[in-house]
Image 1: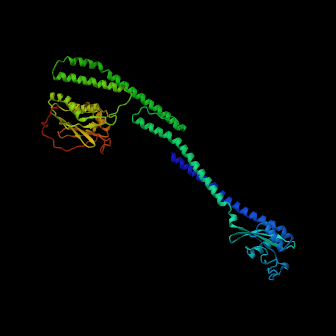
Image 2: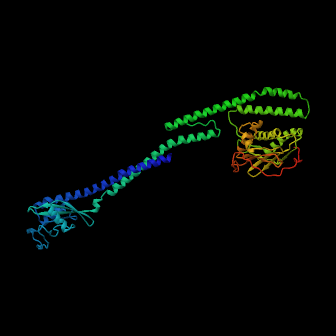
Image 3: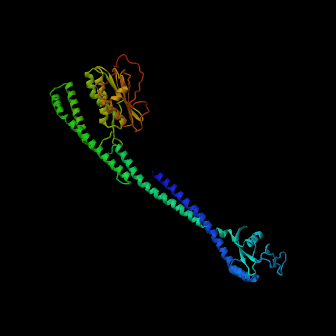
Length: 485
């Protein structure tokens, strides 16, 4: 917008300057020409009274000298008696009233024909000569004959001051153009800066900075837009606050049944099942407390708060497998974990990775028969970390529909929230989630976590597109299992 205003102002001002400067320059040239010939007419008029009185050469030379133009003035006097071809004692050649005799005084520049034509017509005339022009002014003598006063007007006198005037016009035009561009630029800045602040505020609000507001300034339209944006941002903040309060209230209602459940779990006595139940109840209480604190917090939290933030994925995998391994032993499931022997740092919060693993492993226990084997593999690459959760169950008939359930369709008794949690975790780092066939014969969920924040590898189709690998289905689940240390 700013440059558009500058270009429009430049074009309009340039057209106006050209429309006025060109005619004015031509007028100045004509005025200079008229001034030069007016001066020539005055010089000729200064000689006319003397010619009307006398034709004596000496007297006329003094008159021409007093006029200050003896070098550019000539006086042509007709021959006495109207005869031509003779010479007087001074050797001057004469003519009669028709043909012009030689120049009596000064240098002749005009042709004889032009001088004769002026005598016949009896009015002044100008003619072009070498180096300029001449003014031929007829003057009546006392004898009734016509003398011609020739005044030479050089080209420099005709163009005197024209170049300077044109240079001044060009400078004024350039100054007008520069001034108009500067004014248009300032006006453009006055319009563009509020619009730019509005764009920046929209970006900040989209990035989760709920305190982003736009100053109300600039033209009236942009001021109205800023007021509308600030009102919208206030409404967004209010809606999010209401949602947080609602989530906190709903989570707080779970405390009463959790208290009863914890008391009942405390009375179960001793044993692996009782210990596992009490541990599950304690974890559930911690999760509810986390939800309440997060919902009450007015500042949105991110997965990784800055450089060095995140967690050790290997440690989290070992911890969660330690929790689920007890339930796997109760159901007779064989399990395997690999890739957790060395620390693997990822830019993801520990609680988010644990929630994602619990969601996937919970799906394994919920949607596969008892005794179905499963495995968790952790692969550490240069720019990404891959977490594979696979099982030997019946698999997923429509993986794309399973990813769509992550948007809340709730088919087959599943809310789809587990896969949605995993997807948001991966996409927060620039990665993705894919569902395919595992080497165990069932389903494999691959979580791609980017380490450098670059975009995930190009893929086709729907988000979470399926990458199927053709592997021979084993006759039975693998017998490898390893307890955690």
